[in-house]
Length: 327
Image (cartoon, rainbow, N blue to C red; front, side):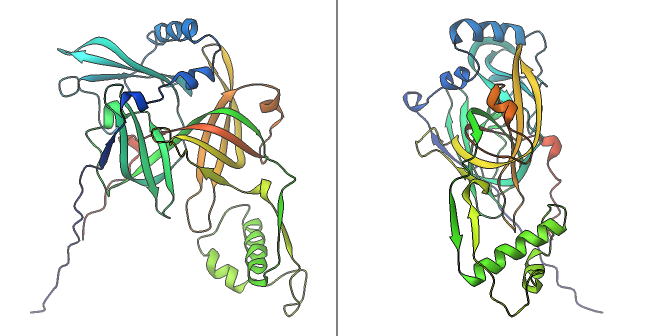
């Protein structure tokens, strides 16, 4: 009779670290509403009233249940909409707590929650998220009122990312660096050629292809010419440095898609932008919304842009991959 050895790998999941954000440190949403209107005191109350006509109950990692939650989250299926938080008593809405403009985005990456910076009074929270390649992303949690009791770490979640842009402009094309190191030149040239040969996509075996790459326009034993890299053609993401405002970010990236929508009658342009793109990691794509203007009209797909954004995250149960059995 043969012997079999069974090995089980068990990962203990706990609630992520929560850091309190005092009310006097919470910046609130005044600047976010100002992206959309110069008359907040008039427009926002009207919008809050109008949204009730088509409001939905967003489901995060579970359906909303008033018997186990003292907060009710209202939302909408529109690309740009308002989310509103109400307090609940005896299963019925009791008082207004908070509201903010939100983005529904189809784009996301797999992350684990490192910690949560939260203000329980207002229902505001910022998630510190770590991607598979170790990048840290800070984003406002649209669904904290629904999800706050469900988060676990080091569990991985698929996180959808959207953003409102305070301003968005074409990236600067007059800044560049000259690369003269031969190994760096070879890697840059190889990566560029391989991605071009694969219709702009990064193949899974990119490292092997780079090792075996030979230049098409020169003999193998000839030195490669220096490469000038345009800094305006780079993807970059910098989160905010102020406590409680880490979700206020600067980014630069390439426009992969462009569309339009409306927000209570206002014309909004949606840019799908890749703001982090590394060889061994999933690209970080964000749907960025901003009021339409002459500048947004001039920006086209494949252009590089830079923007100051308010980054948002949403974690839904319906698009999480089922956890594989621990074996």
